[in-house]
Image (cartoon, rainbow over all chains, first blue to last red):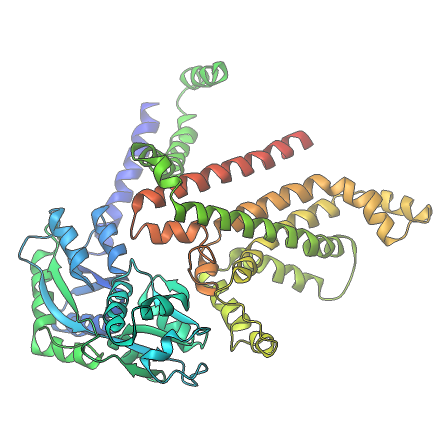
Length: 260
Length: 271
């Protein structure tokens, strides 16, 4: 019986050992980043990798609130790039991010996107309140969905007190990521959606209606290393690269604004 | 309890080799059991009832029950004749049809959702035809049922096909000799004999429909009371209120255990 146990134990030890041995030689930096950063950070990651031989950057792209929950439940991450301050603050409060560590590294704004053939003939922001339109928004739990509702509040001042209510009555679906909103509009399933300018920039064949600054919400994205990062030095280097001129020019290419 | 004691006594007496079976099994069982246990412990550690009875949880529960029951009814109505033909008739391309029927079971839900969207969406292959009649499926409760049927109906068809195929050919011949037509044969002989297989297939389909997530969120979207079924509410709840997500998960586990229990009971009685 002892022999059997020892055998099984040895097997388990061998299994545990396999993981590090397989990846010797390459250090891995794990970055948890908001879904809206998918294209830009993928590019930044490959530039960073070529500047740091032997380093592999792996990304986990999802809604910021999902990433926060994953980190809180113990998912291993070195860097967290959030689409809003709220999720970052939650990690600071939980002791997972050093207070004062988060830095704003870009800004993003909202824009209305339409399918290329504009089936509902939407020409202005007021048209969003017209009954019968199929509008797709990000869910209120998702940062961009929250900003969207704040922007609609601001529009009430201009278009009438029931504007927001009429617009929300047109919502056909509250999608779980901003990318799903883009996809539904791109496929023509929705007549309109509200997304970040960066998402609209990633898909050229979409119609757009700009949201004037007075109604628009400026989203500030914070980035920070995790206190229990496995690669703290690489994490700092990655963040420095994102804030550098080169990193910022990649972000600008994908439709993001500079931090302000 | 005494059979458990006997098992342990047997293990202790019967030497070392039994552990080669018991130990790996325990590891796998721990992997299967611990997450469920953690979920249940978390649910009862927090305010389970308040979370389970919140309006959005209840509306998700109602929508899940209504859509999954409609799915089961549609599946039985359309799937029984198909399973019968597959089991008892000979026709060309049958093995290709079998493949087509089994495919949705193994497809990733994201593929299923995308395929449904491209087929039945506004600009879809078939959806653009529906649009001519003013019908639009995406973002409707009908889309939820369609997604559930797409992924869950094959389970019923497969079970029913096996049920029909297991019936002795001599019974069929005897019925023919007595002058029964195709419908009488089905109604008087085949349907009663395969009844148990049909029932357990229907329960399997129901369980799968209740758990449907990926195809639904892609094809039907997410709107409280219209397309937000329990799995969707759990996924979005994970992002806002963990308590509600945990409570709904535990309710879903309870429902699945009950339904699986019923099918196991049926299979046992059969033997």
